[in-house]
Image 1 (tube, rainbow, N blue to C red):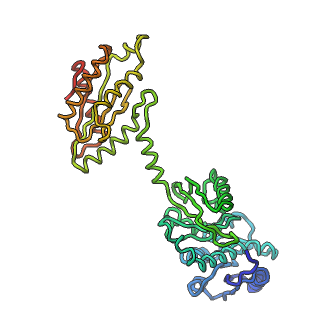
Image 2: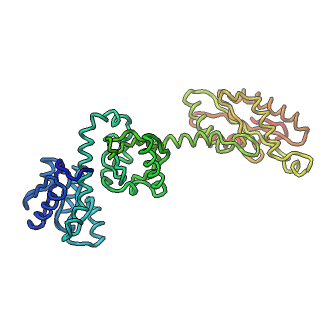
Image 3: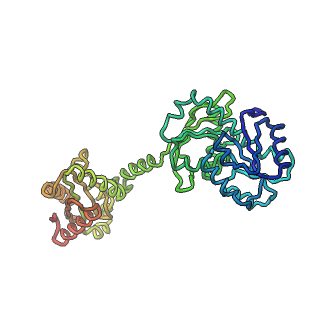
Length: 416
């Protein structure tokens, strides 16, 4: 960054005239910015409304009357204006109080010129960088319009957020104004800090790259973002444009797709969680299109006595072979599927098939399975057809009740 910032404007408010004059002299001598000293009866809010101010230096106590209101109004109306409180106290709770009131930082006075400049310089540097971004925004306007979600400019050396477009995702944008000038470590969760820094250094070297699933905590529920390097602000690489894309919903959908295709390791069939997801999806699909949906539960009895014999296959092996028979008897490409529903139960979803058609399918499947069972176990089936207003849970409950009736009736029974 340059050592002088002639474009930056600093307003001094409050304090004894001799203190305000000393602060102004140090800023002019070491930084070269424009300094305006407000009179005692001049409202800082009115001054902010009249002209651009990059840094408001309040020389007063945190407990002085009206200070909290000034900070709050300034933060609400001019979020890009940094606020630093010069206070006679060095106690930590005063610093925390000032931050809660809306200040960006505090500086104890009296202090040395070096300490004063060290506290104020970062905020003036940030303002100068923001002005350069504004001047070059025409060059990078396509980047700022790139996404409806967000583009953020950061300083590579300190990882400070210095600018963000107005269309940035609301979940994070609402906190950026409060986080301006603060280390990015306060925005990201702790475990992602090192990963982000490593990715940022890599991006500076190669000029491209994407960091997937960065977890950002915006003060509420953390959300996952995909971050990519959009461009460098200038040849000196004093600012990086980072493109943030909220991928929380995408990841949620991806997890649902993965869960919807999860398989039971013992049988190779889709598992119970996959059944629940696909049933909910199928219910909404058929109700919207006004087509039929039938749930078939196939239960196996005398499983325990059969499994106790050493010369017979175990439960999972029998279910796996049964699942293959069931799959060959349904239209797997038309939304029908078979799942391992329980320890001894298979579930079959039949889309576009009513109870009458499902009975014929169930009879063919049961007959083939019984023929290949060599009389070692019994098979029964319970059917339930989805009606208007019925939930997925109610459909499952009706199918379970139907299967129980079939099992109490006798082997090979299909109910209803």
